Image (cartoon, rainbow, N blue to C red):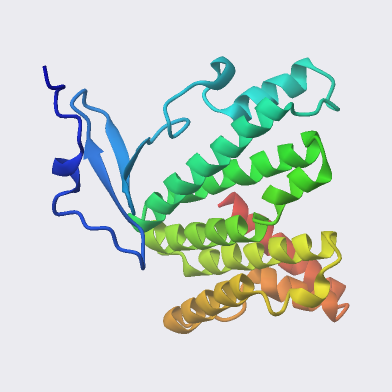
Length: 247
């Protein structure tokens, strides 16, 4: 007896793969929940929108990162990942990458930023618990890219939801600063200015500044005052920033 048709031809019909840009969509599952689908070359990836994208609960936790945090509290912080746990970490990196790409395509910038934050925190855990430096650097080398996507997503979220281009510019500046810290940490300062991701963040920042006719933000004015050793002005600007954050 022939098996029930298990192909996905019907799903792929009319949804062609685009090699130049990712394509994603939110779909209503028959049980009522939403799932995120990402079109890839050989088919479709379907991901949960809450928790871990594959819907699993590694070691009984919503994500592997949550399990790592729990283990850090329950065990000596100096523990190292086993080879099996390294594979589990690799899987979580891959899953959150694909979902982040889908969110960005759908302009779900808050969700994209949240998944990027998850990935950056997981990278921090890799540095703390890697079995060796080589394995840690396999992930660490992608940190600037994740920082870039997070900063861009947060900036676009600011413009999209609150119409706050000044705050968007601060998010972009923060992203540039974080990438600079990465280069400084690994003594690669000479490569910072040529980094394409940095240049793209600066381009978006200046485009927003021109579009919304925004001058230097308070944080930028503060940095300039400190560089000129105008500490009286710096103190005034710090107070203004604190008041702005409270409001």
